[in-house]
Image (cartoon, rainbow, N blue to C red; front, side, top):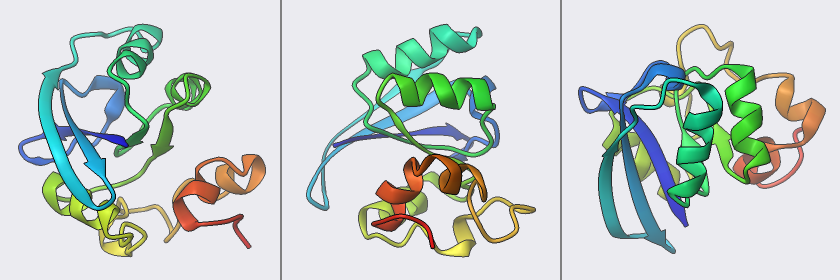
Length: 135
């Protein structure tokens, strides 16, 4: 599985739409097997989504993201886990260990849930992220 986290100063970048740096980690089971860092110079949303897909990213863990960009990434087969904050390394470890649902990684002002109604409406990332449909 290939997981990507946009970063700024070793933390999850607050807004993916304008993030300039991406850490891409290959994991097998719960073990990191490769890590690379890349610049994101693309400013147009479609070009940015295409670049992430071309990097082979399966899961993007990010802070805020616009709905159009999230839709483009989802259409390209990338699962998006939005509204995440914290040190990128801590977020990565929490994802691998299944602890990313901890509210410590939730962006302030998100009312305790990620994309509260979106996951319920589409059954999208919530099924992947929580292990099944949201109640």
